[in-house]
Image 1 (cartoon, rainbow, N blue to C red):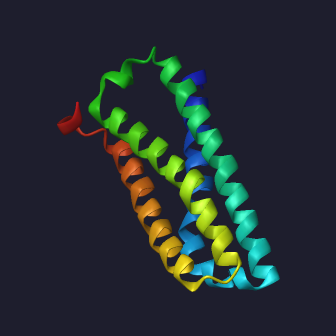
Image 2 (cartoon, rainbow, N blue to C red):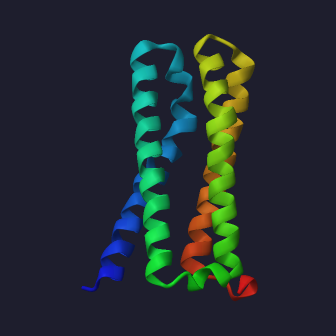
Image 3 (cartoon, helix red, strand yellow):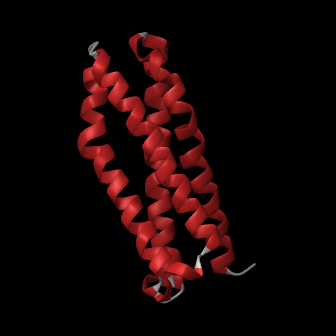
Length: 138
């Protein structure tokens, strides 16, 4: 097994560790008002954050291994833009909404749930782009 294949396997595992808990989060959001539920959601949030950083770093290393060639592909540019955009929204907006929800604001919970579903759809779209590497965006 060469280095690229090994890194690709780690990248796919990080993607699973990133998206798996993210799929549970909208459904578990209702538990945030209880201490045990809040702890569970914080652990999921931490796992998603760590896996996201590993995913980004691993992706950059894979791009480097390919001598940045895939950056010329439209699907890769779109994937990176979606990833960075979603992470920025999550960091600068959703984390603050989560704090409001913990304080009992019901409207914040509805907004956060909608965002988490959108975020999941964005990352599943990125997975489809990574797997399919569509010629449309070549």
